[in-house]
Image 1 (cartoon, rainbow, N blue to C red):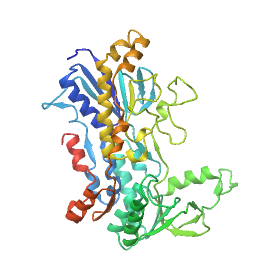
Image 2 (cartoon, helix red, strand yellow):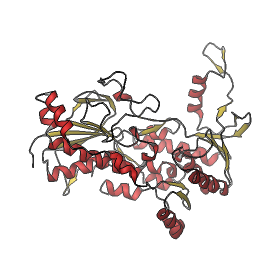
Image 3 (cartoon, helix red, strand yellow):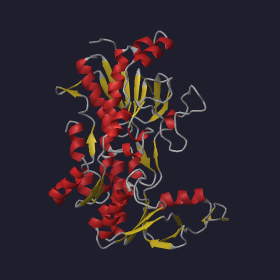
Image 4 (cartoon, one colour):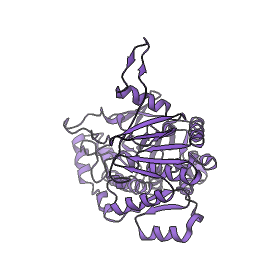
Length: 428
């Protein structure tokens, strides 16, 4: 048992971040009693993003999606004074501290980044308070209820899941899914999985249009001086579209195949980007290899989930924010990554990295290299269960067990999107 004072900062309060905190708390009980844990999260309460699409059509479910963090650091019914929750947004990562939105600095020996992904087209994912989330949910839900014809642009797991929820809740609405790729879902999933998902959507009455990117046919935009700006000015149209998309109104879209789609509500589920701008200015040992991948916007990591840049062995990135493949961007994978990162972090502690770095960077680097950290990639060999839910009664899975479970339980499982596990995770 070591009595060194060690500061660990975890940024992000969803599956990956909360699991990392729990693992660190357990570590403080067993080996490092003076482990100081700080969790930084921009929201005042946990927001259950896994159930995002159910909340858009089911108000009762949406009311359960906000869970206070107040019990996270409870230890025998008492809050441990060594640990704290900071409600703030991460602005910038430095070598030994982070900057947050209130201008404060939080110093760390080890940093775990679990900042997740946001959808610019689903503004509820960017809300910072419970009140703001509920207001946005109400606006979005009202638009879905009022529309007769809804176009879903993008057919990843979020777009398909939301379409399935709407199809089940409002069977009389006309629903159209338009997807630029030739098959549904992420490209790393099998053709059979994609075709089965497509079959079930069509069975629910959804029109599926593949290989068709869509472009909104908006009227010309008037500038302040009254002059006309061409509708081909992409950035202006995109901005207007984002501002107006949750307004029910007649809309026409052109497809890349030369056809038109008419609707009165278009829901865009494309354009998700991980939250990584805060690390872009952290000095890299090789300027030709930035910390953030230009193509994906994700943080480049080694197999151990540490930054790919060996200059920062004490910084880990887990969950949606890192450069692991799309097959690792699910709640179950986020939990596995968090546990693995903390195991590697402990090995660094055992080698005394946090102690040695205060004396000599070279000595600290040697200790980091000596730590017998394991590659998370070894865990990728096992088959991951991927489930796409289409309302309460339908789902598509890639494992035999999950498919049997779906057949056996049918609608009784109620497809609660793991909210019960989230409540348990936060000690409720």
